[in-house]
Length: 80
Image (cartoon, rainbow, N blue to C red):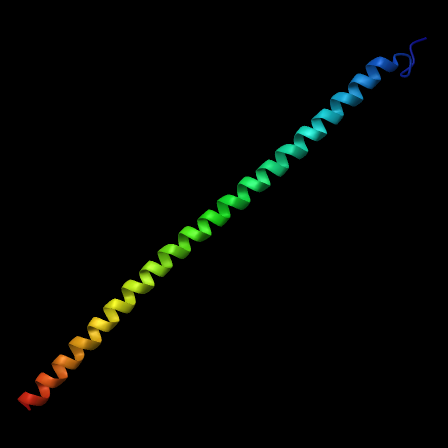
């Protein structure tokens, strides 16, 4: 008779192979999670840097506009 338990060595090999697949999948998931975490962290840092740079440029432009406004106001007051 050939019962499913007749060859325990083949059953042990299949269990070991399945265990390896589980360990490989777990390793892949951990590796992927780490890569995604660092990619998101890098992306957020890059966007934050762009935002800070644009904010500084906008503040400089605002300061220039205020200076031009003061100059035009004094010119208007002298002409009026």
